[in-house]
Length: 375
Image 1 (cartoon, rainbow, N blue to C red):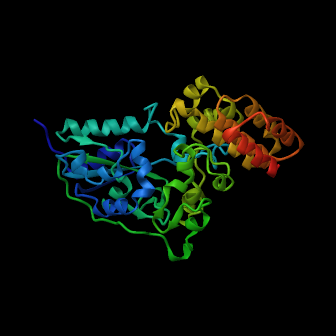
Image 2: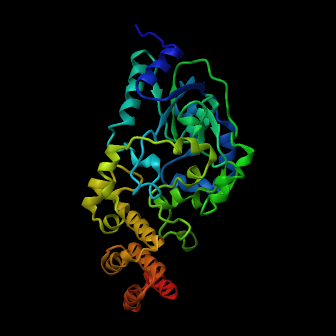
Image 3: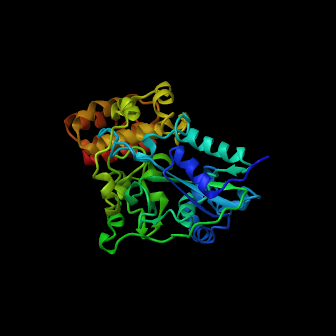
């Protein structure tokens, strides 16, 4: 006979599995989130094109008709340091991502759900439910002006945490909600002022289409010209608003042990390797660890690498970009390589661009002309 679990037993087991905090909330509609999504439909319509319906996720009972409660688990994703060659180019939350390899967080989450099931509690972990809002409603923290969730008990009250909402068919007493913005008045809107692309339009208001993270893995075609320079050397994701946040400094200031698993594969993410990688290299070394772009969209990675090379202002990348301009099979990669050569400038870059002019058309020709004007 199944024995229903107590809150305390669930909390203790989750902590044993390595989760850092646990909270409970009801399975009621996230009404305010529903209203926000309706009012900002234009900004979020692109998500439906990639199969994510955030509107549907605001009602847990649409996800699981038997839903009675939501258990929220908090997992820290910056418990170890990452190689300097990767920080500032890749969002930290992706550097140890196991959504394809399924050898880390996925195993622990699976074990947690198995534990619930063994005791008569069925569960679902919907990807489109507002996990951060669920965490705040479960009393685990609040929000920053940058729209991110900040823990109120772990990771030194920082945003280096990942909330995971588990919808269950058993009712548990909910925790007191802590929804709200917890930023100090003296922060002077540091994240909003520092957002390079202006994606943060105000406290807890973001245009995702301008966010560097979105632009690196979901943007349509070539990155907009007016955003390329401000995206800097970010290749996949972005931590800029977290790095400048005063609430995160206590965590960032400490010395952390190196994540050896990530360090072992850091060389695979060298800019030159990314720019010239073939499908086999991508599927073996890159996609298993950063899954948003499938093999058919490898060109995005190469385009991002070319743009980053241009923004380093380091002319040692000129020969690599010339090779990509002349040889890469994807016009978009060649076009961004042309832009990067224009950004780096110099005699060698200009000569390559002049040689390409007259031999190309379409977007590549447009970028060559633009690059020649800048070189």
